[in-house]
Length: 440
Ligand SMILES: *Cc1c(COP(=O)(O)O)cnc(C)c1O
Image (cartoon, rainbow, N blue to C red; front, side, top):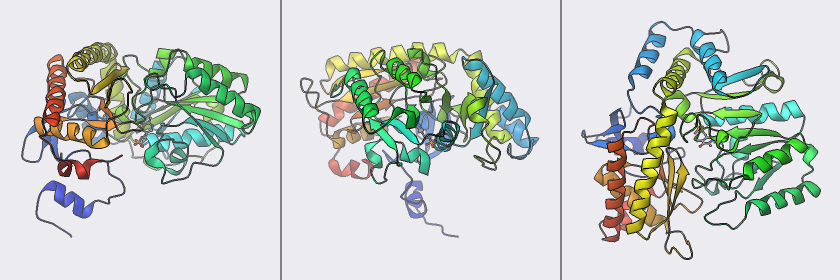
């Protein structure tokens, strides 16, 4: 056994591979309760990241503790692949109840957003017998072979796109290099030339571009895209991994644009911190063949019991409405900050999914360098809040806190962000401080 003396961070660096981590601050954890994380040494940190959106109900939520404890203590097997189990079937029934639609529908369970998008990719190509896929520059669908190959994030240029993938620009209202119309025209041109629509299986969409910079698409763009797809028999896969299940102030983010997706992909907050993902779609697509997308412990009773608790708490505690209300408070408070700090070029989002776009100059909207973003994150950590940055220019502070965040925690979080901006401008964080934490 290798044991290295020192801090948790140093021990982590000695034994955990450096090919699968995204660290934006020195925060190392020994516990967590509610919206607060406990750092080594015992300091409490307000978590504005929900651990990448996974901790939808925060940490140590009693409903999750109870559901998980029960399903571990009296475990209905460990594999949905091998035996039906009560928590998984009940969760599938409950999840289907939240998604508008009719006819025979099916749920597939996995462990992560990545495996769920791989599953979706496999079933759409099999069901349509078409090989091409459309997705977007800036989108992130995961890190397995399939999902990585159809992602368009600039942090992923270490890998080649999947053959047959067409990446389109995602229209960004704040930096309108491509308007919604010009993207649709580009798509039409592709259809007329090198991407025959009858060869396209599906379009994968993030209904709010998350890791690509918290971009809310222009109203009507997704509906027009859907209309194009319908004309050509192209399936619509909506990736709700980061923005689904109450995060954006509606149960599903695609409902903001009245989309009617064929497949919906869930992950992150769905498991409330446990590994859990799902793909939902018509039986005609999903019931492809036995032994088609197998994982032994997928749909296990522990993760699915946690997912059941998440959906139950969302319903019973009205977290959809709460996300809308707290999200508005957060957006308003951050907009107030923008009046004092010219570095805040734009504040945008839906519900509790808010982005703060940092600019050098409000006129040109040029993004700040990544060191500036990293310094603000670092200072916020020092002052007691955890958050991340996203975006193709690494200049967007991402606020995706637990859905249980309280009003006073909203105010506390915003005050820390305001103070962090002030302190960074006062030179309280050095380049050397943040060098190890500029992750994309
Ligand atoms: C994070 C993310 C994924 C991948 O989920 P993992 O659980 O990290 O595999 C897929 N799609 C979107 C939109 C995401 O934000």
